[in-house]
Amino acid sequence: MTSTDVTEPIIRVENLTAGYDGRTILENVSFTVNRGEVFVILGGSGCGKSTLLKHMIGLYDVAGGHVYIEGNDIVAADGPAREAILRKFGVMYQSGALFGSMTLLENVRLPMEAFTSLDMEQMDLLARMKLSLVGLVQFTGHLPNEISGGMQKRAAIARAMALDPAILFLDEPSAGLDPITSAELDALIRRLADNLGVTFVIVTHELASIYAIADRVIMLDKRVKGIIAEGDPRRLRDESADPYVRQFFHREAEVAAPT
Image 1 (tube, helix red, strand yellow):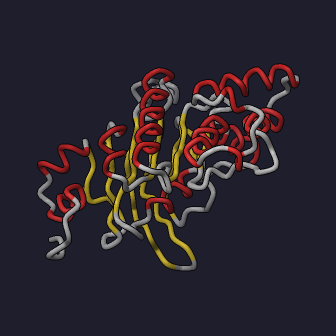
Image 2 (cartoon, rainbow, N blue to C red):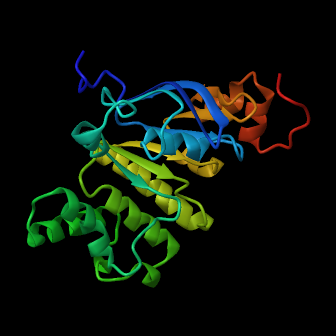
């Protein structure tokens, strides 16, 4: 099987151990993400959701284990090989992280300026296309502080798509958004996944979003420093034998420690 075979998971995490300042947050975590699916990482506060994502994208060095992106290990790679892996995915951070002094067009064009040899006219055309995909083509000349928080999140997704990556990582995309704006963002994510075949890896604890977008989830628990549930979120809600998992999906107060 080749690394581009569609039957092979597009992401494979093997025995990942991660933490900060000598403190282990995740230990021997393993899972796969299938090509084209919307995969959600969820769990309670402090369970390591964002920590896992940041180690998967190579933002921090892992303490142990491997992360394979289309068959290539980002943990072991360096130099041009690592750069090639990084080009396979885009990232949207929780805050959006748009550059405030740049227009939306300039923000989306920035990765193209850094990593392609296209001329300015070509880059502008592609940037407008990306903004059109997220419903913002009429706001290309606006600065981030001139648009709403939901629009900023959509612009950040457009920038993450600038280099046509196969994978998009989104960290808490609905954070700070009202329910209507959050639902609109969910619909956009689902539409991009269905229409473009992009693989999404999303960190969130918003149950409404999880049910709306997720093909499959993993649930982390800080008490075991790893995964306690995996699968369809509705089946986990209705059928899980773990009381903590059921409490999470039903938004119930915890009355007893999980066995």
